Image 1 (cartoon, chains in turn purple, yellow):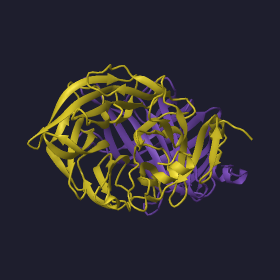
Image 2 (spheres, rainbow over the protein chains, first blue to last red; image 1 turned 60 degrees about the vertical axis):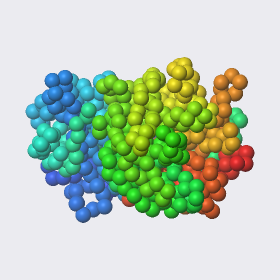
Image 3 (cartoon, rainbow over the protein chains, first blue to last red; image 1 turned 45 degrees about the vertical axis):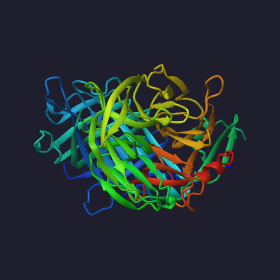
Length: 203
Length: 354
């Protein structure tokens, strides 16, 4: 027998909330570590409001930088990922936002980028953004795994601090900014300042 | 109410535990895992089952933990050995193979740090030890992208063993493995290819086939013999009822005498598809349907990836064998492997008795 989630359960499954309900941010909320994401993506809605990241919290918000080498061997900062792992209305949920550009490090901050879908690592003031979220509602045996590219919107990269390690890549520090994310006529607003905990070179 | 499987997925309908939906002659079912392993440190991918013939309940599961190496579990899911040998992606095993006049059990793993093939031997207790030599190049030339999947093919009649590795480029390298005085050697045999990135590789030793999973493309079958035609046959394409979405991931052979099933991990829909193991007179291998691993004694399995299956009874817990699968999400944002009694799959998918 096929079993369908009730409308009430579907609403719980498709809505991720954390913290006090917030209005969608309209600009970067500053360099105090935070993660605020409000809006809709496909069938899913988000109201995640963590204005002060707490290291003691069960919730985890972290960033990762990724670098690529050109033919001459020079490193370029081509990608950064903002990830959230947290229990949101009683379900463990993971959200990952991956921003890409030919080289973020060549832009003087603050820098603005427009999202496009044609190139994976667009040049100049264009960027790409892949949004992915996944979770299991164990009691209902419900699995969500959705991913896609933003088809419009902007990124205002405001902060990128971190010292290069021996490999020449920055695996620490903080990264922050504001994104207005559009997909299929729906909008997500994101303000973030999060610690970078990892970096790698994409071979 | 009649719905296609695809529309069920789109509508967000779920199959409850032990539920079965028959559609167009296909069976879509739901099973649950018997138990789950301890969590691994990083990112599990692919398992291989070592069968302890003397005491099947003391068999072992060898799993890759992609940023760490290999982890070995007992059948209760407890970690009994860790081998921190790097970024091991996929793993395969052949037991009691005659090589150089000796019977040996070999484990092969694909190593992404330096695109190599690593070999281990296993003793009678199921403990892995590095083979001599331990590491071999995965390709006879410099490749443009990473090594990825791996499979072993044992042609018992000819007394020959082969290792097959897939590369993200779509290239597949087949090597012959020989052993003299305890020392392994590899000889390059030939190259196969699929159009885009493959991962899963499995050989059907008895029927002489190599299967390759092209992640976004579909399931390919090749002759395994070293001098055979290198042209592949597309068994099923992504977009079909059994593989409605990419990626196609792990592959394994579930034996039932000379027949049985090819099990394929359909990651995009968190399910496992079953294909007839033996092609029909037209070379077709029908898909029989697919199943999910839903909430039961454990959480469900999501983003299905690597897998292995044996239909050899492994004690009271697994009387018709064991299916081991990677699970990408687990409580506490961890990852592990799930153990499923193959008897439950046989029952849920309404397969003939083993």
